[in-house]
Image 1 (cartoon, rainbow, N blue to C red):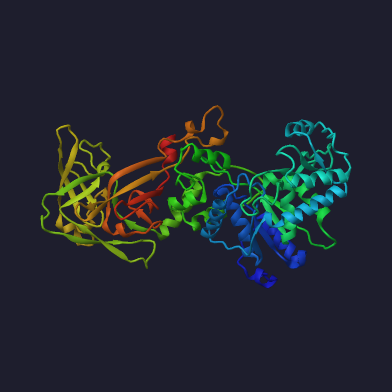
Image 2: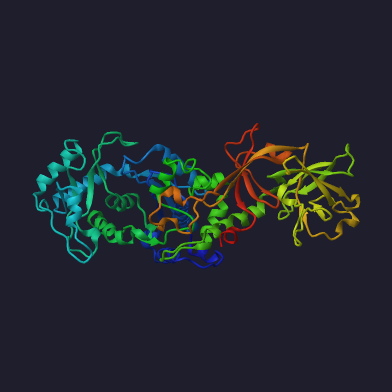
Length: 565
């Protein structure tokens, strides 16, 4: 645990409101000076960028103040849960750079929770209800109209206890009965109107098999699990604020005379423009084949961002920038894109790649001559070193970097105009060759041998610089240009459209037959590069030596708004 002296020695920065609470609690010696948090995902899907914010809070605050954070899987609904998700969640947390103290499961406490439920029945705080879910919902009332008592609310405790045990023994069908807490059907807080705390589920559990036929609801399992574990600060998102009184109510009935009790605090969830966070809709995207799985680089899942080339440092930096408040809002996804550009600019190796190649022939360059041009790996990092790229008579350049009839302010390659080939020579375009259909197939230019980068005449002013690769010393690759998955800024709010109608048709453009520097052929899966003048890219997991595949992480600049205005 961090001492007061260590905290004072830490460089001052603006604290978020939860950090202020933690510092105050530690100073006052609450919970015997302990700080313990937990990250409690349900293993029913893959984590998304919104979960990353919670991870950074739960693990980060424990890390900052010398406490511990446990990973606890909220596995109370076996119908939706799977070991696949458990492993994926663990991988995502470790990738983000966090370590848990212990791993727990809500199912670790099924015995204790069941015993507590029986105690509530015997003490008159719970009863077995035989109404349908629809009938219970109708009797709940509204925020301004009190609810109605269930006809089973006053059944004898021993009768409810017997039924509850028979529910767990598998004697009744799913939906036939529930166990409800007996609280206050007239409460202004709808969650207090006799909430369901156990239901029948006859589906094998991924850990306990068919041991149980009844499973606790989230509101019943969550707070008690916090208590059993010794959690001091139960931190969650704002939608659980209205659940907090129920959280406290059950803990007050459960806890012994010790002074310790967990407390719940809420912060704003992460909402991003052009992004959906609903697990249900993300699952639909996968099932309907609108994306290529949970780790599709267009998905807002952590594994999707990882495959796209985002770094854990960029995600943590982004979350640090947006902070934590008590007010929900929507964050421009451009800020996340800025964070990854900022990180990759500092660390990514520069390389040349031509995505839409056209041959450039330097007609006055000797046919048998080749030169090795030195490229700095990363100008932002003096220790990054350099690599060489082969220069020869025949090169590939971008088709868009040549225009036969160019407008006045076109500063790339056009007949009669000079342009610099990056890190090489200044060349003057002399013309082009077309096929029978009028398509340009080759571009011609002449070079000035005195203008090699670093030579005295290399400082001659030219307005355009273009990149290139050698025709004979480059290799072919597939490049996948990823962009935002949805065209609308807030797709979750769009009414009257099917999910497939909201998809950005340009969210994935595949370029075949691209040409890249030869050294990129040995790049490893996940390795990140800046393709000069184009953007940041990483090696996709489908890449092989025979078929190189690169994913665009993000463009060099944010041109989305310019294009879509």
